[in-house]
Image (cartoon, rainbow, N blue to C red; front, side):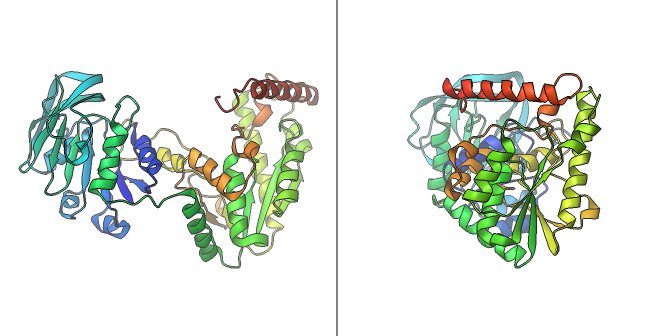
Amino acid sequence: MILIIDFGSQFNQLIARRVRECHVYCQIEPPDISVSRIRELAPEGIILSGGPSSIYEKNSPRANHDIFDLGIPILGICYGMQFMVDALGGSVKQFSKREYGFAELNIKRQSGILKSIGKRSQVWMSHGDSISKLPPGFTATAVTDNTPVAAMANSRKNFYGLQFHPEVEHTLNGKAILHNFLYKVCKCKTSWTMKSFARDAIEEIRQTVGQKKVILGLSGGVDSSVTAVLIHQAIGRHLTCIFVDNGLLRKNEAQKLKQTFKQHLKINIRFVNAAKLFLTALKNVTDPEKKRKIIGKIFMDVFEAEARKIKEAEFLAQGTLYPDIIESRSVFGGPTSVIKSHHNVGGLPKRMKLKLVEPLQYLFKDEVRKLGKQLGLNHDLIWRQPFPGPGLGIRVIDAITPKRLSILREVDAVLIEEIKAAGYYKKL
């Protein structure tokens, strides 16, 4: 387990992805995470992410300095390195010229995280500040033409800093540097796989839910489908999925879903045909945002009415993913702290009185697809492209009519067929 402390970098999710590609589990947490919580998580290492702030600014984000007394290896990247320098007695100053883009890294000491990298390597820089004085116990291990401390190390304490971004593809040996930190410095093992995740998630769902009933709104997309199969494997008949046909679906959508889930996977699903209700409410509505709001409200009304019929249901399952949570959470109030809010994040209508089950909340989309494969879902469903809730309702320009929907379904089906025939479906 690696803990990533998020200082607001646009690359923080990419750092997590790179760590997980090495089959090491990681979590992204805000700078105000307590030391007691870190001890509870018991990470093998900590990565301090980059960020848009300058460490000498009044309201720049800072983590608790006590993290440096935990005896845990720490890697600071860009702003994270500068926070480390400032916290441990060094100094950072404004750079005369912002450095953004490719740079050639000259490695002075091929040890620690820079072991077996080669003396010269292409890296990606993105910083306006630079290290002017190293903290006690640190040495500069790499330089570039414009950056006298492009990498630093305190090998006795296993503290390392990089002024460049190892997580991006433009840094040619970035993955090797992260490998060194994870395996050689932190002594991590490659034990985190979708097989191990599925096993642990199923056990956790059983422990949480017990013999109670769970309701899941099934859309037919990757996230809700994988959530359904995972929970079904955990609690079987205690899961009930609700699929609302809003009359705005693609061609044969409901029939395909019924065949896949009810016949092949034996999952308990209630199909609600509410097409007439949706189309009546949408009659003569042309504005896409108004359509969205109408569709969203009616969906909740229909879903809640159906959910009330399921006696003794205590849990609602959602296919919330990790990016939904990260992007919806304010990290420190800075300019990049909230990317967008998500419909899956922020709780339920209070009147539903259900507890949440979100088994995918720490997974990225590509990991969900791998999990789906591990659970036995078919290839077409795993690689299905996203199809938003309002569906064809906002793809129909102007007012929605049955005839326009029918034409659009045929057009959409032909388009997808041609994209697949040309070998472009997965590429898109």
